[in-house]
Image 1 (cartoon, rainbow, N blue to C red):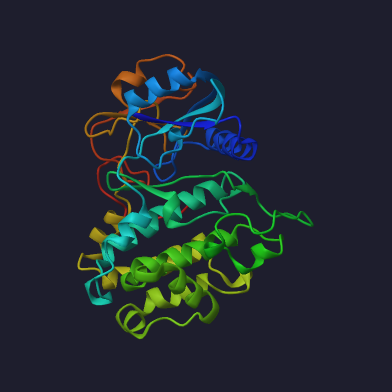
Image 2: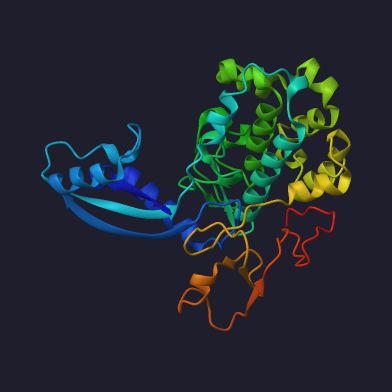
Length: 345
């Protein structure tokens, strides 16, 4: 199943931003931790057609579908067909944990979420983009799989004297340098540090704004969190460094994560396999691949189901598709066993 996002043409700013999001997403190679844009086009509807459409899809009251341009009998829309993620977002997931203490935090579950977000952000960076609006509301769930979404504020990496837009994205999750307009991909690592903090400090969800503001300006980790998870506290502080050059990159984050197995109730190898346990799905139809799958021998994270592999024009004909019957960890092994080493590359 797929999702359809409609933006009316009367809001030029939103149209332009969403069109840019669709264009950027369509150019990013498929990855398990980044939401896929399958297609986008422009169309027009009469008010009666639009209302009939709403009856068919039955959107939630806060969905973007719900507003038709005022005083119009017909209107143009930007239509974006995207991968369907029907299991909510990380913000809602975090809100359900407000009564948990730090001692009750499921370490493995939180690190698995954090690792998938980090993988998704690194994949976006590898395509020459910065997300710039990374926050829990833009992290979606498809089953237990995490998907980074909403690239409408993304931009090319900082280079030379090039200046980015000031204050792009949600203010609460902005890195200090975003206020001045000269920054690079380290702004996403800053937001990643805030998300890591939220994952391991559930009580702060009672007043998220106050919690985030306090940690950004003081960088003081609560005593119970620092005592229970000292390595996590250290990484949070590093990611929230005021100096962007002091924030750990993907390789440094990975080295830190290799120490975290000690906090897990799983063995080291089992913990690493958990980090690599991405739910694979077909890159065309979105079907979850539970048995037979076809993996491209050239594109590292491109998978198809049997039906889509048989179709022409889905993938370049000079790329060989390998039939696989066993689970495939993201480290590239096809023997159903992980190598014991997670990678952010």
